[in-house]
Length: 186
Length: 74
Image (cartoon, rainbow over all chains, first blue to last red; front, side, top):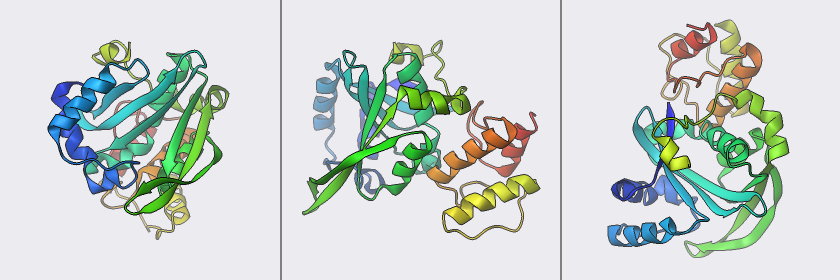
């Protein structure tokens, strides 16, 4: 089963190991050094922000990656989000995680839109998002300067009305709000 | 199994990979078929459309045999 577990300090070392892996960081907007002290400072900072939610993704109890809602905006009923699979053994399951989040965002938080920014070259994620009903909004040209060169960033959005059309295929992709995820998702 | 083979080969060919001649229950989605995250997401949608089954309803699947069991409702 898939669970979203609220990010806690006990997860930070594992998350930092994932976050500094080449497979993960190559499509991140920033690269960070392996520094647990800085990681704890980051955690303390984001934990205080009501606009951010972070979860560790677990499959059958195995921690496999990180998922977040960012820029949560209840006034305008929208949020952006991001995720990565840190455990290489579970990378192939990256496409089945998002529907769990969408069902939570649209039918539990009752938001109207979810947006995402994707680093150029991350074609699989772009295609997965289109499969789930996203539309391309535009491209920020030369938006990220990393590894001594500029990179474009692709903007995509998924409206609730478009997820409604897709969600019948994913109606069982629901986080169990009666288990330990309840704490995380409440 | 033939219908599943056609679905798998459709996904493999769309991704530019070579089709497979046959599937065994022990065939592993990742290690043997080299399915990536997009291909597995597509497989999930196609099987839902074709068979009305969410193969990940009760957790992850790793082999063709597990997919077949889900389709057959075992």
